[in-house]
Image (cartoon, rainbow, N blue to C red; front, side):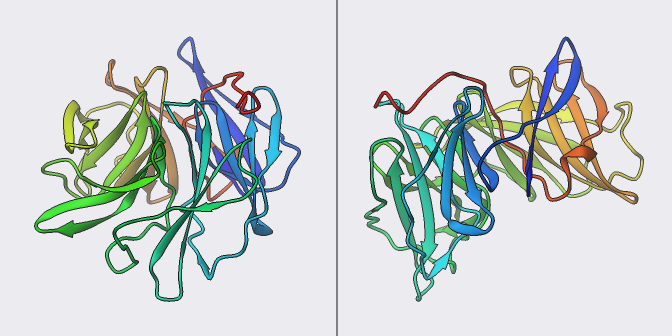
Length: 294
């Protein structure tokens, strides 16, 4: 759980939730994570990025990034390339014509950022990257804003192996709002309708073919601990080997956080007040991986 000036871990062990604070020695907030390695951005200097393994406390400041004309603040991400095991950080920005461009850097290898060559042009007119993307299996997905091409709705994705941009279709029959998260080795889609207590969980089986598969169909209407005035909710992450879904909801008294066990159909209220306001959640796995071996 990352918020300005704070970083917390939410864990589940023996059916008990534990929230712990993590203190790091560099400025900024966590903005992305992948396979045990986290990406931080300095709130006072948006061109300064850090990469850290929070389990080993190994950290590195990335090479200086020249300030772009229109940086897309919440579009940056980190991914692990399956073919090499290397970590790449991706940074997006707009030029003065509002056209998108991407820069990338291989952690521990590159001494400067490289511009990615994109054959097709994208701009804010047909896609909006200004929200936290999702990193899964070497792919980075900008999922929060969909766009339509010839009757099919897509979001943008990058294959960090060959550094190419792709259009990935959303799940068939999706209704808004639709949210996406890392779920094991897959991108999962949370599909619901406004004010509904029913939702589906789909996973992206093959991004090249746009193949989605329905995994769960859930109805929380009769679950215990569901506030009667809960009128909006969205998922923020998976726990316990992707069996517990953590959700953020809105009630007449303010924000609320829930944990829903998809196997047991049980719901619990979570107290995340110590995380502060304006928090963002990321799936994080503790590992001893290091980028120094590359």
